[in-house]
Image 1: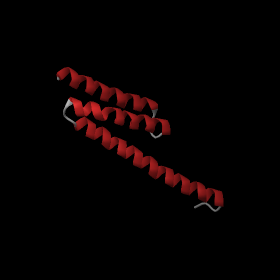
Image 2: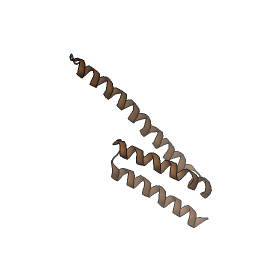
Image 3: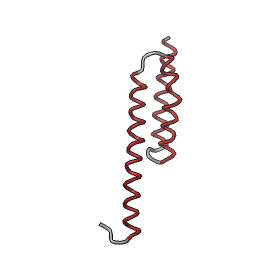
Image 4: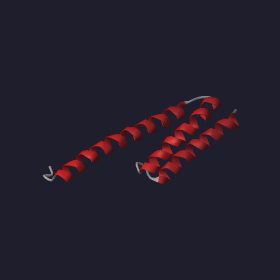
Length: 87
């Protein structure tokens, strides 16, 4: 454990950020999972913008890489378009 006041503070801040990042990451993963299991075009297209926004925020905060965010959004858009074509 660190002995300097500033280092102790930095440790506290890092722990707080880690918990926050873990929360946002897990919440977004759950939202993606729920969206994938959604059946029905109307409900899927209603929820899609909110999930895409969550993914963008993760990338902006640096929790996930911007390319990973792009891949996730691309897969969701593909699924949305497939559901539209099937309907």
